[in-house]
Image (cartoon, rainbow, N blue to C red; front, side, top):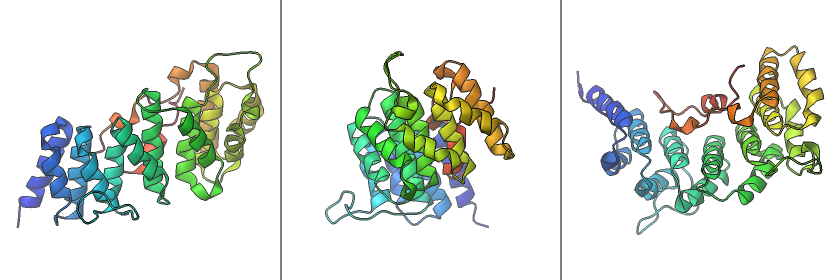
Length: 273
């Protein structure tokens, strides 16, 4: 049999873990070719592992197609594992050009792409490399929008738990339930997807507002085992410093296989106490 695909797969896995910036252009050219989809996806992951901002134009072409004369096309979006890997790679980048690409991802109606755009934008803002307030407003909108879909709403709740906080505690600061983003978070506590409810509980707990206490008590006695586990984690977050609430850098973890957005969202939940 032909051993080349297996050899190429091994080479791509090695390049992923080496995080070789110099290899990114060749990897993305390969990803845009006619190799098997699994190998093209792996090539994008290997290129994304290097976190090279110079890769952004080619990643955008993989996502949005190419217009005549070069560059990403303005009015379309690709939806396949290669495009999802490109979105993951963009989520890992830093800088204003990457912010613009993530904003474009957040504006799509593709749940995987939108979720990766949200997670990338949140971590850019948290690292201080991206503007914060405009993003917080967009996260509030997504969390409160039923049309956004469960994964983007879970990611938005996660981001609000990290970013939507007063700069300092104050007895006169508005409570969680009084802030404009909190209504959307509270509305997620009865969402049918347990992952969404778990992120809403975690976010509200991270905001350390007493208004969450009745919801925690109710969730801790729920017949839903997933919700009980999420409530236990949220209760630990509520009682401990916010710095201990979550995976500090989930986008640093390199996937062993295809990008699984739900698994990534699960990795963002507070650790078990």
